[in-house]
Length: 407
Image (cartoon, rainbow, N blue to C red; front, side, top):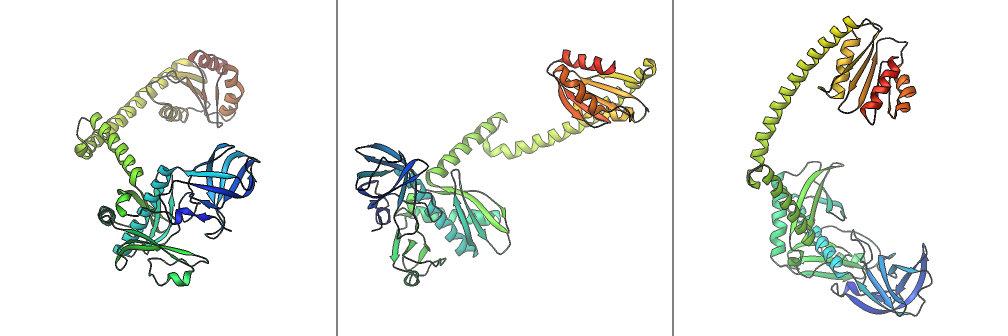
């Protein structure tokens, strides 16, 4: 005898007394099936319920619930060590109803959003996923993408239907052929019993589709639906959204973050876009000024190096500066060695304890030098024959490294 599925007739039932009819083992834990259960097994895109199983042997967590079909047993994966339960044991099964109700809100919200985009834009739902942070649904519009105005209309249409407190009914059929007597948005042929969920009036529903999940009995229990974003995915529209308490918590958190950002910019959230545009323009101007200043610094520092080379009288030269970042310092070094055949240039950046080696002499292998010497002075790095980079913990180690390679 298959498990009696209490959630199919009473989705608000929280607990039931049952008798274990079979016990299996998985990864050292008991997996039990019972003669009846309030637990919803994973299916139809909805996660399984979680909760507890209690008996005279203790109270244990039910971490996952699954089945093979709507006519099969319902299996409860527990954290009870293998051998804890026996066939015939009396137990009490209790679900985490807050989690169940959140899933009910989210699942019905998905139905209503899919129904809205179908009726408004002839969009076909090609799959959805109920994740921990949001729900996604992939809508096929024949290759085109939703406009912002269309997404706003879909969201508003669904919320108006939610707040209209429409009835939600589930009709069961013994087989797929019988279910065709109740026209649905999407037919999903399969063997065995079929449940069809109708939102709104039976004769003129807001949405109707076959589904094995759990749903509230009134649309108003969904609370609200919020669309977060929409992006292309395999030629379709992937809509990110959520419903009920999950959506409310996300919107509240986002509103708080927006308020904090607006406060830092000394404006209201409504004025933030304009303020950011002004600051972006100011930033672009500052970047242009910085680029010009860096160019001036590189020209000035290059002249200093050239002057130093004339008086040094050696085939190597050590230069130190933190006026430029390391990458700009490297570009400066290339400018210098390209003008001087056989030059070995050592460039130190004291602010970040980084040393650059550059050479226009093919016999000097900068990368090999770093590999041979850097680790002896607590450094690390590498590079190519014409240039290499070494980073040190402190300036003393960097100076010892420079002394070693120049000697």
